[in-house]
Image (tube, rainbow, N blue to C red; front, side, top):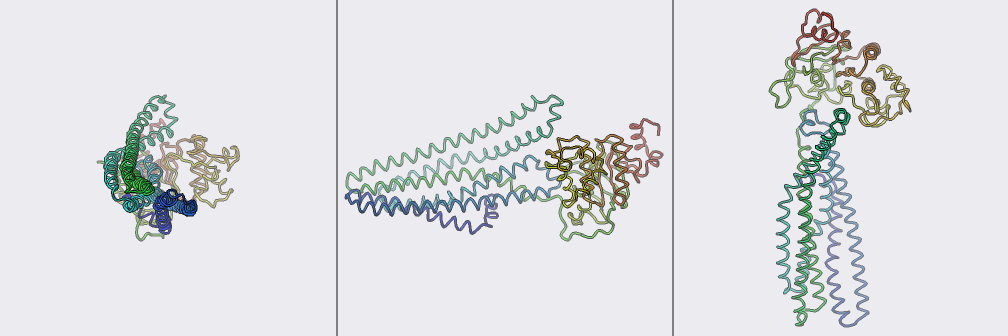
Length: 575
């Protein structure tokens, strides 16, 4: 997967890659030429005392060294541009893929690991691309070129290279084979740390309310210790790797000096040639060491690439139609036709045989006991899930055949848990429609019974909202979420138990304003409170995933036992 990912994303930057190859080649050739110039200066300048020759060849050597520096800088710049651009593109594609996930895929992966895959995992692949574009090209050039140049200097000492390189490669292979599973464990442990941290930050109020701080601290300590243990094992292998590599390098240099000194003493090798050979041996082993360092990075990047690939290659549960319907014959209508739904792996469907129709402009309430499937039912309207049986039609079109963007433009969804984004009151409301004017925002707030408290906030529409809306109360969050849905100008408004945090008086005023100001908008209301739905045009009663009644409040009180029990439990009257 790593190779596939790099080819796919680096392939878009071929000019940069070509520049890297050219300038890395020039840099490596200059590095290989410098020891030969050094040997020439020693043998023909220093040994003979020819100062003029030393200055002329030394100046040329400085020019080559300067050129090598320039080429290396340019190559590194090209590598950084290509790698960072590829990383940006991977993050963009992962983000777009995750943004198109249904609730099913998000639940399957988990929010924590999706964040890790789009940050840390992409960073690992990005760093490999960056280092690979420099080291992985330079290393073979130095190693192979160094062998050729060393053989040209002295064939008799080349057996030392034949011993040192295989030893170094054997050490690298042994250590890398033990690093791969550790890197996979490390990324998994990192996911766990992110998950625990995310849960504790999100549920900080619950943690404090039940005095669970020490238990949660212990839970985080376990996850943190686990990742530390794996990281320590990886670090131990790194600690072993580089001293062993330097030991091989230094022993080889000592061998060159020992056996080369014998050759110099016998008059078979000149001193400059011996120095050049030593430098080439250093370059050869450095090239092997650089390649080894890269091979250490590759396993971790490969693990990260596999995790990224799992996201990019995952099949969406919500398949977009090849020829989507963009024309909606009956705007505002919602129809359930023998709908069933079961979560993956569940033995029993959550919903079974649901059939009803909401005409444009009507109000349909969904009521039932906890776990009866109310939230799941309304989640099928904007196609957060796909039905496993039957058909859901919105504005006269099967949601599986509709153009999703066009369909979503006609639906305003207020979730059970109101969520606000970091920013201002205005930016959160304009999430529903970017071009909404301040007057429209105030009007939506007035309908949602939020105008008064927003006007009292410091800055009004410009008042700051923290992430998740934690600086406002639950009721204020719900009213801002309802105003945001109103700003959207939908044909269908879906309220998933969106009035639960409101007092009875505010609830009544809000519903009256909705019915009065938005008479042509279809309203689908999930509610626990009976007083919220008594004036609905029709009430659908759910029990254990099945529709056990439908009608007005008075009709159901008179004829439906399940609804009558709900009324009795809340109102305390004999129905």
